[in-house]
Image 1: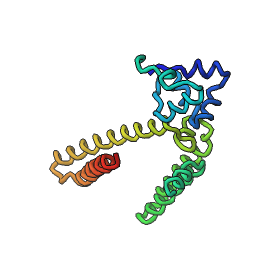
Image 2: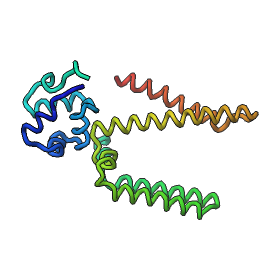
Image 3: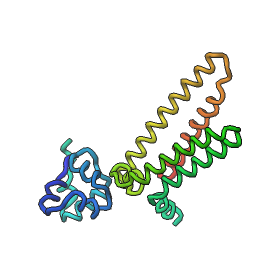
Image 4: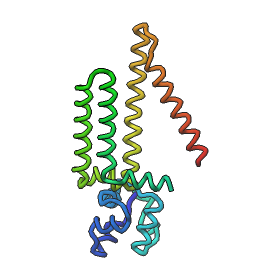
Length: 65
Length: 132
């Protein structure tokens, strides 16, 4: 599933490790989400959307691969 | 409360090294009772080395993710890896059981091991279905 985590993170000048710490997950997990290798759970998806001030639909695209 | 405490204990950096050392001591005791103390000491050494590895490699992201710094992705990886290991074990058991039967033996202990695995699977399915 495609997502906008990387652009939103870089827009705010955050490192993967900083976002990972804020979300309570590992840096590898953030990296996997950004590279569309891992689809996060609903709680993590909501937490990410809230963190960046967008909706889940704006952050994740279920029409993509 | 108990679940939180057990999770906190398992997230401690000392859990895996202590578990390895404890298992090594149990193997040593069993080997000693069975009259093979040297084999037991060797096993203890191997398990202690594993424990030391977990203690020293805690800085590695993957080791950290599977032990003290577990998150949802690593929990999923752990679950899938356990399923693969279980599948390999089941296939090995079936092959060993069939080999024993083909040689004219009773098939034990593979019969009971296979039955235990099958029963455990059915009970787990029933439990997780009930739990929702």
